[in-house]
Amino acid sequence: MQIAADELDTEATYKLLTGLVVPRPIAWVTTCSPEGVTNLAPFSAFTFVSNRPPMVGISVGRKAGVLKDTARNILATGEFVVNVPDETLVEAVHLSAIEYGPEESEVERLGLATLPGEAVRVPRLAGVPASLECRLAHAITFGQGGSQFLVGEVLHYHVRDGLLVDGKIDTRRLAPLCRLGGPNYARLGEVVTMRPIAQASKNDGAPIP
Image (tube, rainbow, N blue to C red; front, side, top):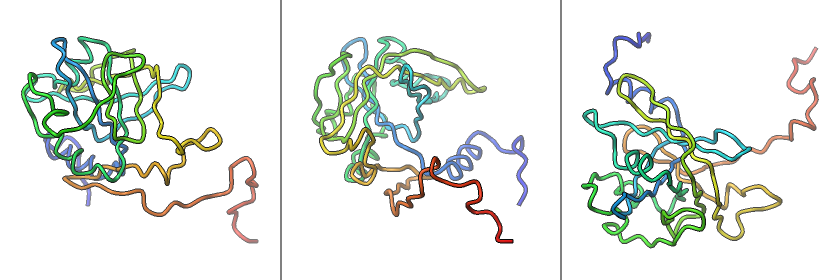
């Protein structure tokens, strides 16, 4: 099958890309409105942008040309928290995508516990294995729809005890929830461990003469 990109409308493009760019790490983002209302929204992808200083980025789209609450809050206050959900939280993550008015808190609606931030005024979720407190560093607009790529500098990490082993996160213990296309999610599944690349030979994997 051949598909010309310019023949797809916005919805068809979204369905195609979100079915191909998988699995995606979910950013469960808490923000605060200028009025003090805590907003919670799941974003089906986030990425690290820099390690010095540490930065992560999320892409926030618009609906009917209007910025979503998450983007408005971040641009207004300059702060947000990326919470990393594990596989036990799939229902809450899914339901938090229901749209409420900016005066309503998804955290309260879902009965989720929060804890105060250490470096930002935005609360973090208490039941997740990890949270990253962020301060807005860059806001870049992309595409005709005006999606905002928001990059935050990580000011403080919260990591559940037992997850950090020799300076690295134990991914199996983290048990991250992954996003697929449509209303579909995935667990980590089988982990394949290869030899560290520093120990690999250039002849590894070469055809046998």
